[in-house]
Length: 402
Image (cartoon, rainbow, N blue to C red; front, side):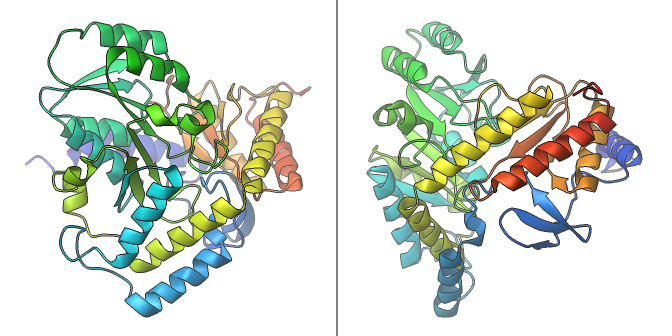
């Protein structure tokens, strides 16, 4: 009899090889206790956290912690229902209004996760006669949303506005709406799209535009609204999707839009309709973290400085690091074994980052993905650079003279 789990034999073999090569399972690291936003206890040792997406350090916000405690005491710890049943409390509506107002938009929908925000909006907006035009390096949640949609999916070359234009022009005269989907910061590499050029394509072709600002919300733009705000084209974006689990340090997702039909999307969006809503303490903590973000623009300034410091340090060592400066910095390596060894050495020496392996990487090469926080000190960043140097030398990823 065929085992239900035989399809995972390849995964089991690959995971076994990873553990054998490095002594650890890189996908089951436990942060036993957060000491601060930048330091956690891993394997009983204090470890610098450079792989948590906690860009503004707000997971440890005293204001958000107090708000969560008060909300749990007043409202309980859960809603036990979806947003269209018994799962909407006044706090949910308050958060939607605050998110919409912060973006200067007509309305907002709040989802239980950022993954569900992409899953729900993409699968609901694009119908059977429509077209989804996706950046080739889109996040898994975007691709999963496209799989749930009956629309035809067309991919264009990563960050290539000319290729986007060509693919849309081929659809001239075809019935159905066209929805372009791009990201503000690409989570694996830290690449930033030429969003102004893409908006120009959107205008000329009459397409709609959805921007996933998951990794750029709180990070880019004068008020932290993301890449569209930074480029001055926010008014041309039809739908902005994002998450609370990065810069705001909580959990949940959202979509903001000026289209009045967003209210109808609520009644057709299955990931919104059939998922329990966020618990009161998470909603309250998110609103408090949003206040922190609004009141402390200096966090974005510090984050930008910290990202530049780590980026320059990696390039100074001769590492193959991301070309663009953003809070996501990827160090690309040539061999999987080399990447495994270097990741393990980093953890041995006190730095936690994310290990990403093909086929999950954009160019089929392994990479070490780092994320920077506003709350990292210059000393912590310099220590991480020094540890990267030692780990790279041990893995033979740098010349001895580096």
